[in-house]
Length: 177
Length: 124
Image (cartoon, rainbow over all chains, first blue to last red; front, side, top):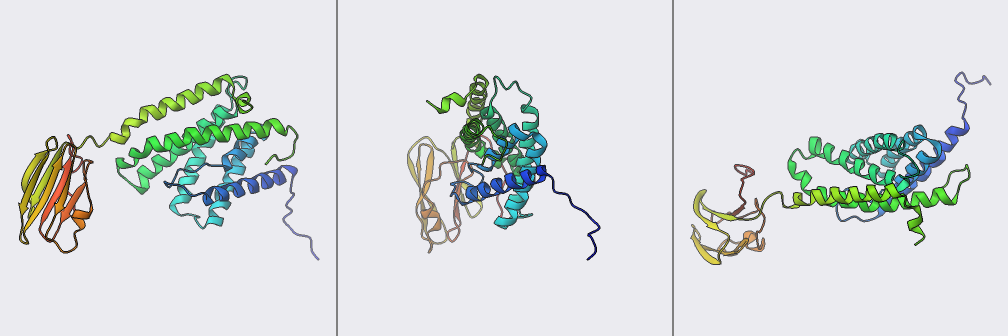
């Protein structure tokens, strides 16, 4: 048997990303199963994983985990390349960008809850802008902003608290969720 | 509270900021303005423009008979219509600007408008 020409070496980092992304996908599926009164108002449980990863392994790993979650999650839900996929992608990209900036805030003052709320607002902001620009080209979309903003505040706080608890209870190196 | 221990001082600040943002966005729920007037059309022509401040009842004659419209402060509805399917009657009270009830068989429409008109016409 000839040895394979392309040699893929799997690093510990790769394995970690795969594990964490799996956890995030699982939570994304739970998220999708929760009935919601309004499309777009979701707990965003997978963001707990993103937060834990960001604070423990850094921003690059968080980007990988989130990206894989959006991709694999949409494939599993049959939404790949559907409008929902692009909405979720835009929201994720924006919240990762905000997280990239916000993680430089002094950790003594701003904990996971701050990051979570900021990310939630960036997420919903990105989705609203995309929806306005592409799906529903009418300012009527923004009529629902108060509802979405309230959801972002509430779920952002809850997710941030859960992430803080996870980070606090498992200070070890292995994947928390 | 155990959970409160996870909140750092800045977190409260961010939460307050978020709450302020929610508060600032609340007026958007009323962006369409308040229902102020109702426009009643018969056969495409304006039959009457009513101020939604007083309680009154209007009968609009059409090819099938009279469509009865009730106006109350802030809302209006079609009470009775000679049309066969009664869609416009079942729509109930119209209270937001832009809402419209159309009794197609009798060629009567009732539309709520606010202070500003958001669009010129509707087409189906």
